[in-house]
Image (cartoon, rainbow, N blue to C red; front, top):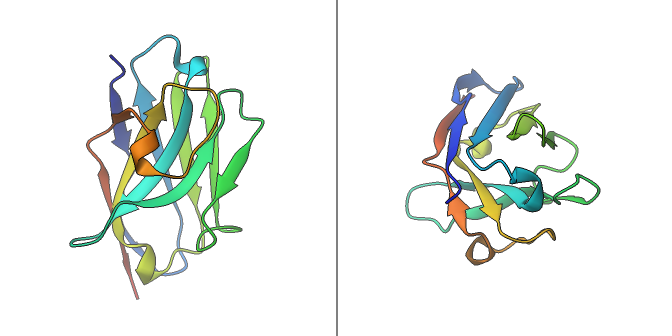
Amino acid sequence: QMQLAESGGGPVQAGGSLRLSCAASDRIFGRYAMGWFRQTPGQEREFVAAISWGGGTIEYAGSVKGRFTISRDNVKTMLYLEMNALRPEDTAVYYCAARADTGIAHAASMFDFWGQGTQVTVSS
């Protein structure tokens, strides 16, 4: 069973940057497509970015494209999300997720394992 643990969240001012990390427990991490999602109170979990097992396919939500960068290190079993030019509307709990398939997806229902989340708060 894959276990995921996010870190790197916190408070930041608008225009600032944060780097989120997600540590995965499964040594066959490279067999999973991975994603980042975010959620605010009362809202559905929202797709942010996804990366295929080998990193060859990457997709972003339109709201973060050009500002956020997803990457992975299959040797270290780590997933990352570099967030730049942060805006107050980026405030949310950010989750990493693993999909037991090599291809990426946007729907939260397509992911099989989830971390506990890390809070990102962007102040204006």
